[in-house]
Length: 280
Image (cartoon, rainbow, N blue to C red; front, side):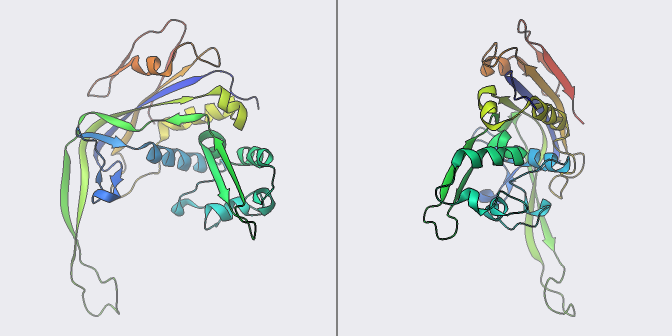
């Protein structure tokens, strides 16, 4: 597979309705907002969903979520050093060839060659081990709503017997659930060909990402995000005609205007065609 030759920019328009798109554990799991009240979905959250969709499509993923593990490894270190599911301990021992290990990691795991990864393990008795930073070509920003979001909080109770033999009912446990009533969120990203050359990220990999972005919330339902409450409205994809790009990412991203109903208009940029893809 040939590595990516041309710079790519992209944008996603997301709709949230009666869901908690990204709870903040330091704030009672309320939906994240900035100081101006705009709803936020962090870049970490979006990359987690991308990793899950990639894993479901059959791609090898290094940073797997606990509820979607496919190899039984209990930690990232165990996965990396596994002789079956990883690269083996010798790849990370003191004195190991960092470039060779990085190359093998990028070849094995899609998310490593896309988003990058830092491998910092002390293998066995090797004090300090080896630290291998890999900078990935794919970047994605946090998504923000177009206007301040209205958050509804509902008090809930749990009245089941979680302990004992079931002969005596336990006391009710009080809790809270939070949701965003409605919001249109927008996020932007880019793929850098210079960094793609280092990790081996290919044109085929870029096409895989483009195909999965409209399905970002497929198989992602939970009590906080019921089926149908999270939706990708549009994906906008720009492929430049050179490695450095015909325009800056900032200018490309600013060319998109999103209305509160999720409809979009795109300012024309000479010699750069925007591909608009409907959500899944």
